[in-house]
Image 1: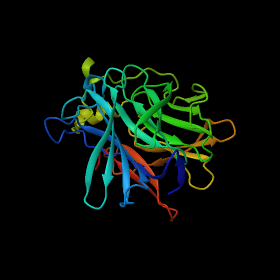
Image 2 (image 1 turned 60 degrees about the vertical axis):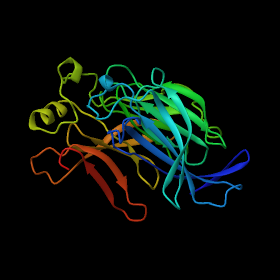
Image 3 (image 1 turned 90 degrees about the vertical axis):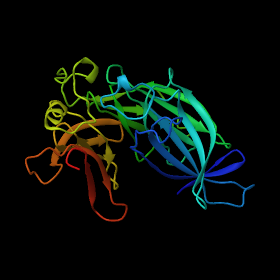
Length: 306
């Protein structure tokens, strides 16, 4: 964890994560989609083991490729304080009216600044990437918004030099690079690099509200439709130089390996493809890819064969 200052408090960054529970736990709380945590030390509180949780909720199920359970949220952004000593959560702030921040699906904390990024998920219109400064009381101040350049935006990565944010769009499989200010974490401009693995070809599968399948199902006919097109689902840079990008493609049962040019902030040529599983002939559907923090080992999470 790397400490950094925010007015009167010292907030420490913790690992961001994704909570893939779409179901509502009661009749009042919307289904939680993504969760990212940052640890905070409060000089006025004896409990130093506290965390701020940034939680996002779906707000419009018709705009999604899959069919969540639970019910849509009226507000999509919440900040909680978590007390590790007894496991309690205290709601600090509610933000993001459903009409304005639609289906925020994935969140990423800046590794050194009090900034969190979240992306919206929509299969018909381009997603948005929103940047928020986290104030000392846990409140959110929006400091930027950019077009995600593709549909069903599902993953965000910040490069090793914190000069660019890389976004992954699930539905049309595109990868985009957006410049960041290294000092403030704000967007320095719109997209300056796009990679399209479909090479401009039209999508074969239809959205579920236009006769397509519900991507939450896992029967053979649904899987066949899900794998008609490429579907990039994440992008992870190598932990050594940050020049090789690994992109699991759920639609094609492989992990694509790209050259990432740090100087220009561009997704370059496709270097290689890796099998996403044991090549059994059955669909794997790779969703996430992660390196071990100490060993030269990478892990793949396969959605369809899990």
